[in-house]
Length: 181
Length: 181
Figure 1 (cartoon, one colour):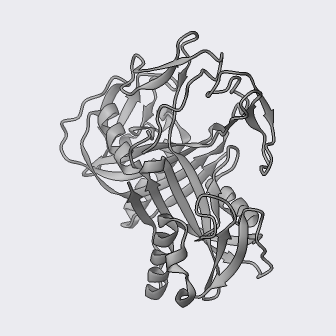
Figure 2 (cartoon, one colour):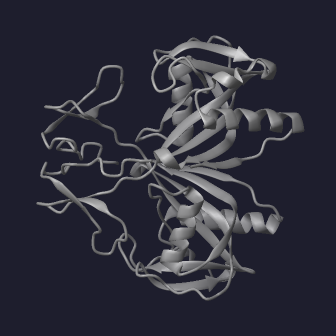
């Protein structure tokens, strides 16, 4: 489960916090014992793409923990100042050195245990001039038959790929909302 | 724009932070000058519903700032430990005292200037036994002709309602991804 008590000191003044339920609230928050600043913690977003070149999908092999050595779709944390689509393009470039054209939001997946929402866009590679970034060991195109299902890094990647190939067989792409605990 | 320098002290040890680009990163983060903890700040999520009863939509008049007195769809910040759908149901109950059945994700809107993604679900009211919660002055059903367009609280509410009525006229509901700067 999420460590919901990881704040020990106030970001405004540095004093210790106490966990208590503020007035007009119904949940415990980290509240500063000196200046009363309330510190909220909320789920954050991971954004990425399903980059395709004809029948093939581009995957990256992770050069960092967690799941070092396992294969993933290019994705990472959404940053302040960008849209989810811009973040997905940035991560695709940073992790796979690839430029893509987005084709629509494809999967929206809550990963409750880690406080994240993962958003994947379908994307067409503009060229095959990709190259692994510093967080990837390899970037490689796979046909459906070649996907290393037992060496995928995350459940959200597996589910997104499964739904992608299923939709492609049916000739129509939907939006897939899936929750993981 | 977002205040991206609002962290002054380390949440782990309380010492002052400096804003600098950590090794293996490409953005400024608040880094503790003593224990080196890196503090990431990322967009968060607002979740809500478009609650309907036949031809009518349920809106709430805000009892709190920002936009006190203006009308909104029931929505609020997604909390740790819940899915976006669960958060949307909770907010609909808290703000409008209403129980609904979700009918699918309808709008996904980045609001870049405030670092938020807003997610609205279509929802059918189970009954008309609703009542404003502590953050609402009123909760009321509106036909399309009655919607107080000039008294809506937020752009995301206006856009979600516009798209909702447009889709309803066409007899099919899509997913609407819209970005605001």
